[in-house]
Length: 199
Length: 164
Image (cartoon, rainbow over all chains, first blue to last red; front, side, top):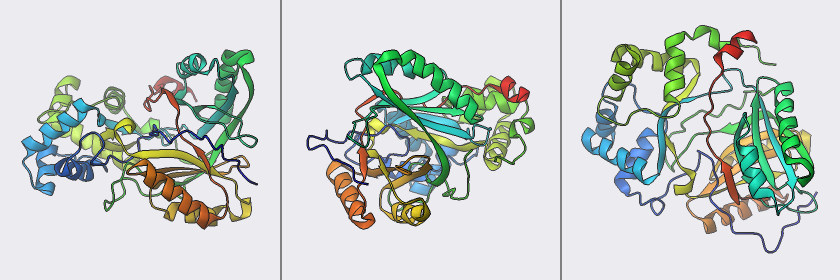
C-alpha cells in the first residue's frame, strides 16, 4: 500500500503532545533549565522540599530551581506541575481515535464544537493524504468500554451533521511504546508498557 | 480483557480529592506538599505518603511538570500500514528510531501509529525519511494544523466508576 504524499504538504507544525521535547532554542531554555527539565521530567522527588532535592542533583540551590520552574511556567514551557493520573489504570481501557472527513469550509467552527463535547480529550485538524487518508479532523475518545466510546462518537457524528462525509474509530489494541517527555541522555519517565493491552 | 480489580475501590475520599484537586496543577512554591496539606486539612507527611502510594499503584503516572508542546521542538503524528503478522517486528524498528516516544497498534490498514519528535523541523523530516527508508513502507505524516482542544486532563466521575 502506498501513501500519496501531497507535494504542497504543509510544513510540520508542533505536535500537541505532552511528550514533545523542549530544546534550547525553544522557549528560551538555557543549560540550567535543561538540567532541571532532565531532573524533573520523570516526576518530582516526593519529599518536603522537592526543589532542594532537585537542586542537589543538578548543582544549584533549591531557591534557584523554584525560581526557574516558576519562570518556565510563566513563559508557558511548563503547562502545569501536576499529579498526572493514569486514566487507563482507573478503568478507561477503551481508547478510540476517531477520524472524520469534514468539509474544509466548516472545520474550524465544527472542530471547536467537537472539542467541547464531553469525553473528547484532544481534537486536531490534520492534513488529508488522498486517496488513502481522507480524514482531516481527529478527536480522541476515552471510555471504560467500546460501547461508551461508540456512544460518544454518535454524539460527535450528530454534531458534525452533513459537513461530515465519512468517519472511522481506530481503537488502540496495544501500547507498543509510551514514554513521557524525554531529553536525550535522560532516563525514561515511564517504562515502555509493551505488555499492556487495551480493550 | 482488563483483569485487574477495579482500582478506585482502593482509593478513599482523600486520595480522590488529591487526584481531583491536583491533576490540573500543584502550587509551585516552597514546600508545595505542605500547602496542599493545609488546603486539604491534613499533614504534609500524609500528602507525601499518599502521593507515593498512588504512584506505586499506577493511579498517578507521575507528580511533576507537564511541558507545553507549543514550546517544544518539532513533532508529528505518523502512521504506517504493515502486514499484521509482521507488526511487532516493524514496531521494534520504529521504537528503536531516535525521537519516537509513543507507538500504538490500532485497528485499521494503518495499524501502527507513533509520534516522532526532533529538536527542529529539518531534523524531524530527516528522521522520518531515515525511518521510512529503513522500514521500506511509506510513512503517513499527519502534522497538527490546528489544535481545538489540548487539555489532557478530565474530571474523573468517581460515582460512575462505583456503579460500574
